[in-house]
Structures are given as structure tokens and as C-alpha cells.
Length: 413
Image (cartoon, rainbow, N blue to C red; front, side, top):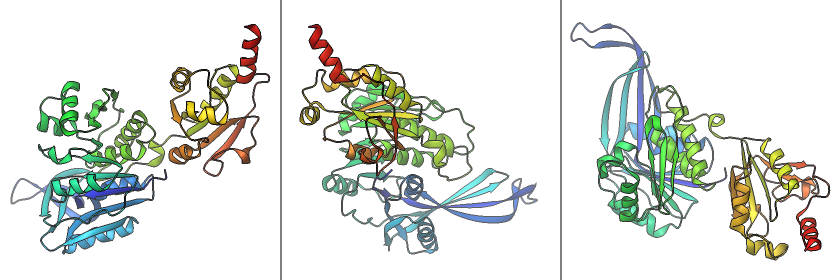
């Protein structure tokens, strides 16, 4: 996925003190933990970046750390993970640190420290998308959000914190869990979510529902529910970071696909102990792409689409818009929406995307499919997007074409 993402928010140091516990303290009925081993991991906005790095290299973090040892440890972890960053070294801040004491895979206690009282760096140029990771630690203020919205024309995704969502007004979407939504707005419902969208001028809300999956409510009135994936839950730490990272990265394909990816990613990380990132192979499917006008569907089209669908986990079909088709071919018999609806009804076709360019190159570049499929009248090297993905040619059915169908129809008439 070739997409540039900026992450701004509260970066934290997650420290894990792992040891063995086989006895209680004689001083108090609490376990004694022996042979402590300390592991440092990036938390908060840093964990969002770690999750993004599973799928793309073009990630940059903007945040605040203190002039302290923990801040230096965060800087080292960022360097170890090859995460480009711009950090304010705060004079008035103490690095946010969460220290967890673990024994026999069980968390015994958590010790929190730090506060952020300095402004983060400004983002500069505009990336493909911006993720705001707000843990309520001081980095994300109304002024910071307003500066982002006013100066960056791209989708802004926010993991919200607290009851006051006014500062998020005008972003693309927020991704609260059910508890966060209800603490801010009362019992969750479709109607309540629509009211929130209108009040804060959002394009959508993605509410994570724990074991019940997640629900998207869009400004257009669309509601999409994706069920939870049956999975042993070991530790939910950082699952929200995983959801917003994966959802934001894949949302250009479509909302439902992005939700499915986020669902699988979150299901993968909650089975791990501590702050974690998903295994790429557990999240990303083999994506197959084909394209055309698909004006009058015939058996040749069905043959190609079925063969293409067998080559991967998800088949995306790009179709020329009416304007594009007029430029490169002829006046369409069926308009673009009719053609899209017919294609979506065919078994094996997962998504249909209308593109307005004369070729699908920019669409392919955005989707980054694994395989491009074309009919047997094409030569691999001449296929648009051959430099972006593997090309496979499927033999065509003789005598089957839209132009011949039109000719036969004229003769009958």
C-alpha cells in the first residue's frame, strides 16, 4: 500500500516488567516478582505508527516528549522501528510512561506517569491522510485540531478521548469504542450517531463494539455492521490503535473493506500479550483487479470474472465512467450506475469502482492489487499497470464481445 500517512498525538513509552511469581510477600498478601526483564514498546501515537508500518513505509509521527530518560527511550524505539518523526522536546513536559508489571502472562499492576504541556510540531505539507491519536495527555488541543483542518485537504481520522467532541468538528471521521461513545453521548444507536455526525460535521463514525465487531454510520445514511472475529482475547492493549491505523490506510478502497481489514487486524493483536502489531499475512488478502467498460454483460465477461475471482481472496472491478467510455470507445448503452449494479450482482465480484480517467492506472496505483487480470486479446507487457502488479492473461471465449452483441441486436431489430 503506497500511501503517505501522518500521525499526530500522544506518544507514550510502554514499559513491561516481566518476571516469575511463585510466592507471596511476607510483608503483605501480594505476589513477589523475581528476575525482572524490562521490555520497552511504543504506545499511543507511537503504536499507531508501528501498526501502519506493517503495511506501508511512508509514515511520520508528530508528538511531544520530555527532556528525560523516557523521552530518550522513545526516540531510540522510533529509530529502531525506522519511524520518521518530528518531536517537540518539551521544557514543561514529562514523557508519558505506562509501566506494567507482568507475571506468568498476567498483568499485576500498572504505574502511570508523565504529562504533556508543550505544543507539538506543525505538520507542514499535506499527506494522503492524517491520524489524530488523542489519549487526552495534552498534545491534542482544539487549536492543534483547527490548524490541521484549516491547512490540510485530506481525510482526517480521529481516535477521540473525553466527553467534549467539539474540538473534532469538521474531521472526516472518529473511531471511538462503545464505552467512549456512550460516555460522551449516552446510549449508542444509529439515530444518536446520526445526530453526532450532524452536530460536529463529521462524514462518519466507526464504533468498535468489542466481541460484536464494529459499525460504521455515514453522513449519507449508510450503516455497515461487520461482525467480530472469533478469537481468544489475551490483551486488548492498543487494539484501538490497530483499528484506526488499518481503517485509515485501507479506507480508499471502500469502507466495508477497510472495516474487514481493521477487524482482522484487531482480532490478531488482542490474541497477543501487551502492545502489539498485527501479522500482515493475517490481515491482507490477495487482491485481484480487472477493468473494462462492461456495458452489455455476456458470457465472455462472466467467464473472465469467475476465473479472476479464483485467483485471490478479493476481486475488485474497475469500470470506465460514462464520460471516460465516450472518450475512448463510444456512447454507453447502460449508464455507469447500471453497469456497476449489474457487476455487483455477479458471484465472485467483491467491489466495483467507477474511474473517470481514460486508463485505470491511477486507480491501480491507489489500490495496489497483487494481480491484474485481462482477457486473452491482451499482451502482458502492454497491460496498464503491468509495472505495479503481476499480470495474468485469461483465454477469452471465441465470438463473445459487446460489439458483436450490439450488431446482432441491430440485425434483429
